[in-house]
Image (tube, rainbow, N blue to C red; front, side, top):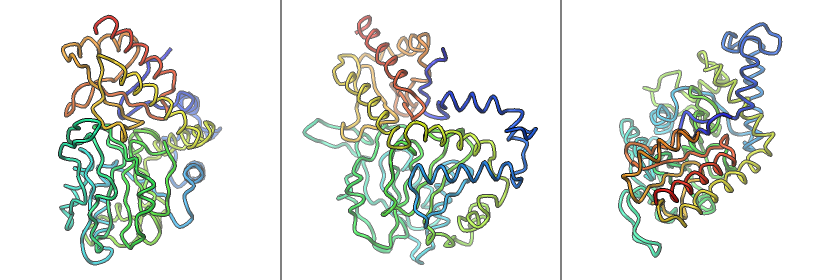
Length: 375
């Protein structure tokens, strides 16, 4: 049996997707070519790309007035591409950012190179609650606390912080925000396709594929039509949303093989009952892991319970001298990539769509056994 992969990204892919890609590696559907070898403008690849877009639209119920773009550079590139495309849309050159962790902080810092980026809300300080005192970046600023400028070109939110394990949970409040000319831009990289999206209040969603939708190399951008063609003069043509949309994501050679694998992931997701089906599985996995941590004397989660990520679960051993032994024994048990991010420490289990319930059950069983022997 293959080891269970808890990597935060690039991360686990569904085994059926890997097996199909292996079977088609040298000859895609009798074409005599690998997808890697195809012209991106040939009929074979344009079919692959069109099917991937259609399946993604179906999975997320993307409205007709949104474009689906396949771009490159990951979410880090979008930190620059978003302001270059949107800061000039109303002439004010302003954008508001909700800071909830390291990745949103990087987005905010990059946006400041292209205009007036302001902090709408931040969890960079400790928070005292009835549940206890929570460290910076372990809680999420409530929507009611956001200070939004009416002349901002957009509001940016990272809805799942991969490193800190904080996931935005106040979706009802988000949908209830007063309608305005200020669109919401959501970085959903590490929980893309794990839950539905209400596009009625959203202007842009972007996500690097390597967390939950495919291999590294392709970035999905879902953008409302009226937000195209507002790019700053300095924006490179290859990063201009309007130009990319008009070229059907083929302004230059796209990441063809990454799009092909993402398309296979989309088809696999449809077989799992779509986004609603996988959401139910994700919630069960997260409940299993967090409920054990909360009853354990050895392990602890430092994230506020109301915003614990269902995709990235950081946790700590109360006796950190056991960290090395935990990781070594976990790897020997076939539980891979559990070391926490260097900026946070501890452990982290990334339990994305492709990580099955069986993997989380194996992890919890190992954690229980380790606690019995070392706790």
